[in-house]
Amino acid sequence: MGKAFTFGANHIIIQAMNMTLESIEQAARNLTIREKAALAHSLIKDIDGKDEADAEAAWIELAESRLDACLSGEMETVDGDEAMQKLARSLK
Image (cartoon, rainbow, N blue to C red):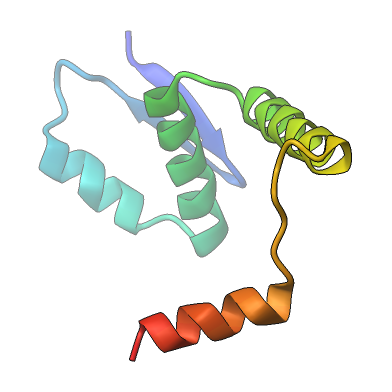
């Protein structure tokens, strides 16, 4: 039995044993832009092995730890304009 994927109004059944990569790619090309985006998101999520909520939680945790480090003086800060000027000079 194939695995069923639903994207928008289209319903695609993929039978892994019977479909080649080329035929899957061709079927994907017939999707709408939104359906392609949903498929890409699903495939990337499958590859990453993490849920988007997990990634968001990790970014929030990192941002909070950096803020704490800045507020406690553990992390040196640099003025934004100064940092951009230094970057521009380094790229010349």
